[in-house]
Image (cartoon, rainbow, N blue to C red; front, side, top):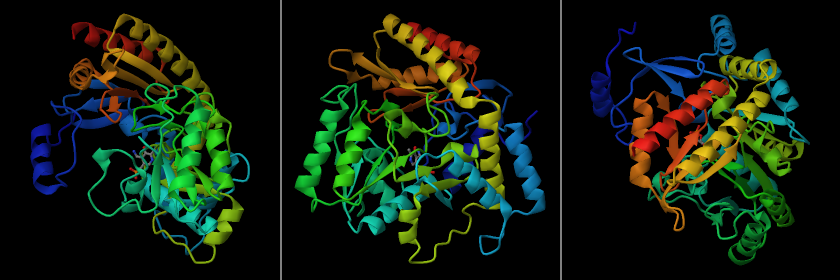
Amino acid sequence: PYEGPLADEILAKRKKFLNPALFLYYKKHVNIVEGKMQYLFDETGRRYLDAFAGIVTVSVGHCHPHVVDAVIRQSKLLQHTTTIYLHHAIADYAEALVKKMPGDLKVVYFVNSGSEANDMAMMMARLYSGSFDIVALRNAYHGMSPATMGLTAHNTWKYNVPQGFGVHHVLNPDPYRGPFGADGKKYAADLSNLIESSTPGRIAGFFAETIQGVGGAVELAPGYLSAAYDIVRKAGGVCVADEVQTGFGRTGSHFWGFETQGVIPDIVTLAKGIGNGLPMAAVVTTPEIASVMNQRLHFNTYGGNPVCSAAGHAVLEVLEKEQRQHHCAVVGDHLLKRLHALQEKHDIIGHVRGRGLMLGVELVSDRMTKTPAKAETLQLFETIKDLGVLVGKGGLHGNVFRIKPPMCFTLEDADFLVDVMDHAMSKL
Ligand code: PMP
C-alpha cells in the first residue's frame, strides 16, 4: 500500500512552492500514485480506468513492461553524455522512426517537448522559405513557449505579451461549428484570401493538427489539408503536421494523422506519446530542408539522450508487436458506434467525432443553437470520475469530453466508459 503524503498535504505544498498558474482537473482532488497499462490508482488504492492517458501522453500503457525494461537497462549502463560523443541509441532510434515516415521525411532532430519541436519547425520554415509569415488554424494548440504561444489559438493559453509576430490564423475547417460544414475545399479558400490580403503573397509555412487535440478532438473537414497544402506550396511555404497527439497509430486507420487526409508534409513534429511519458520530442523533415539548417551547428543538451531514445525505440517495438494501430481501429470503431447510440438517447450530446482512440463528445444545451453546455460538462466530468473513469475535457468553450486512452484500452473498457457516461447523463 501507498505510504507517501496524502492529497491535502501535497496540495498545501503545491500552493506554497509551485507555479500558481497550475490547474487541477477535479474539485475533489485526485492523488495518483501508481499506473498499470490502462489503469491508475489513487492514494487509497482505488482504481480508475484512464480514458485520457495524461493528455494523450501515455501511448502504449502506463508503465508498459517493455518500455520500463528498456529504460532501466539503459539507465544502469549510461544515462547521458550528449551528442558530442557517439552513442548507438539515438542513431538506432532515428533509423527506426524514419522507417515509419512516408516520402522524403528522412532527417530527425530530437528535442524535449512539443513546444520545442514546433519552435524548431517555425524556424526551419522561415530559414528554408526566406519568408516570415506563418499560418495556423483557429482553435489550434501548438505549445506555450513564447513562439508557439503565437501559433496557439485559444485565449486560455495566451499571455498578454508580445507574441505571434507574423502568425495568422485562418478559419477552422470544423465540420460541426464551421460555416461550410464538412466541405474542406471551401475553408481552404479562406487561406488563399489570407495569403493575398495579409501577407506579401509569400509565406514561410502552415501548421495544423489533423485532429485538434486541446481544441476538443476536432477532425479537420475532409479534403482540407490537400487543398491547403497546394495553396501553401504555391506561396513558397512549407507544410508542417503537428502529430503530437495524432501520431503513432492512435487514429487506427493510419499511423500518422496527416495520412488520413492523403497528404505528405514537409516537416512533422512529434511529442507526448512518442516516449510513453518520458520527456522526448522530435522534428522530422527532408534532407533539403535540413541542409538549410546545416549553415550553423545545432545542439540540444537532452535531445535524443540514451534513456529517452531507448524508451522511444521500445514504444515503436510495442506498437508493432502488439499491433496497436489495428487495435485502436477496432476499439475506436466500437466506441464510436456506442457513442452515437448514446447521442440518440441524450439530447445534451451535440456531436460525436474523431477516429480510433482520439474521440470527442461535444455537449450542448440546445442542438439547434449549439450553445455549449459548460456547467453540465463540468458536473458530468466530476460524476464520471466518481464512478471510476478519467476522461479529458477541452474545446474552446470547455464543453467537449476528450476520449484518448492508452492504446491498450479494451472493448470491455470502452463499454464500461460509455455505460458510466450513460449513467451520469441519466442522473443529470
Ligand atoms: N502540439 C500539440 C498538438 C499539443 O497537444 C501539445 C501539448 N498539449 C503541444 C504541441 C505542446 O507540447 P508540450 O506541452 O510538450 O510543449
